[in-house]
Image (cartoon, rainbow, N blue to C red; front, side):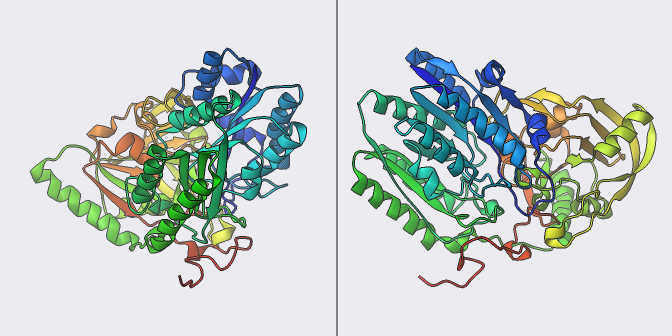
Length: 498
């Protein structure tokens, strides 16, 4: 047998001003042919699971591409063509199966359904090819995606710590079907709920109950059951909640389970809406908690989440609103990860290690979609670290994957240590701090430009967490954004009855 195994992943925030050319994929990690296999072999990624299954099956392995970029604006036509053509060309040379690690919310300059367009092309090349697909929990599932693969399932965790398990599950279903042991059929559907990403943590309601229902279905008659929270910042018609169920030849059963999952999601739609508070109040509460904890001496840092500027959802990662408020309220012993400012890194590197500097930090990016202009913040301090930004994830999410933050610096103001990077990177692993000599467990506060993924690396350290409503294109208030393409009516943008 000959298996084509590939990865093409991007979560597209159509409101983000950050462009997504091919170089953005190269910054995160883009590999071709045998380099693609080597990059993801022995990792806890879906592609790592696919490779293990292929070797066990004794299949010849072809890995045309493995490419992922941090979330940002629509993928350039050139980048999309390069990735999708690589996969289609490999299939065209002949293969017995394709196992694909996709995302499910890719929008390019040429298609609003990047994954569906790819799968449709593959089907045109090889109409009967067995195709397995894994998708992110934030997949915006489409009919085109479902119609053009054999089995499609998604992660059940957010933060995504089950990627390897889901890859193995999808691959095993596909291989069993190729052997004639099972006949996978899929039923899917969606509901008009534009669920806020901040409300999709799988340890929290309402996703905890929905995921439990999916797991219960898999313990029963379903080969796989997935509830997708969707990605609300991809302004495309299918954005929102969806579900898909795979059974062994029983389409009626798959449809019934799928209907139950979607009905449960609709009944809980209000829980998918985030209700925030003023930034000054959340930071003040965090400060008060820090003062009170000094006497009780609990272990671990206090976390402040700058979720509106989360590059893991397409944020610019250079908005200084929350950082400025933390400085204004005089929080002490705080570490920040991370501010994206390549220009500042160059300045700090030219100044040299231990140099005392005053710079204009961040605020270099305008955000037209929310009517915001970049506003740098003047900060003074000592250059306490300079690195190449290269390290390997050891935590439970993206385990074994190499990280390239680009040239990186730390500016120590005396009360705040700010990690400044040249490539966008969401802080979901302690390596973002330890790679520059900061022990996050020893800090009083950690200010993280993250939303939910921070839990993978920091939840077990934290004594308390405060959500800080700053400014950015990953806002958790959907009313700030102007939607043009999403289906209407949709909750909560529009009033909707049962």
